Length: 283
Image 1 (cartoon, rainbow, N blue to C red):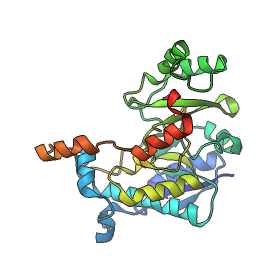
Image 2 (image 1 turned 120 degrees about the vertical axis):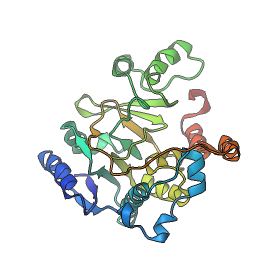
Image 3 (image 1 turned 90 degrees about the horizontal axis):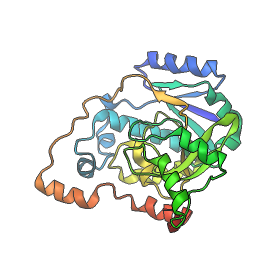
């Protein structure tokens, strides 16, 4: 069975019970990871984020809970690298799991094609029309058409058009039990339930050396030509209220707005990797 880590705060035994019961019902063994509490950070931990760049990127200050959350995920990735774990499932303690998760994990072929497979889908920012997906599968159209294939390209774009963010789906993967995964860029944000490879963990640890965004966007900025994907039908959702309060935006100064224009969302490494992986004709 896939190695599974559950991130949980010592002061939230109620959440541990909430997820533990679900995992036991699905017969999924797990290891609890003691989450780093944002309310008791050291000065070194508080300085982990690039605070000035974070303000430009998100138009707000990073809050202590975000720092604790980021450091908790980093601790798991460090375990994966140190112990040479090929693939691992990482869960937060506010996740609601679907029964189909067990069948996904039962066959390693379902996830070994990816370096990062997000099992959640944050709507409406990331959204997909399952009808359009199924139509492409029925027509045996699994790879994004090239730019001169105008008719096929148009029908493919319908799959991506429901999302608020601009993204691209490059391949469709049919998995067991009728499940479908979409290989894409950018992979949906939300870090409550995902599978990561050893290569993915290494790449995200490297990207975290200059962290100026929430941890659930790190795969947008990671190099290493990561194969990133999400499930058409999510297998998990964030069902409890967030333990990270006080994320309040503020107005930028004129100088900050000027600088933000040049730095906002500049994940160039990932963009270069996407071109090398899929070719410019499929962008």
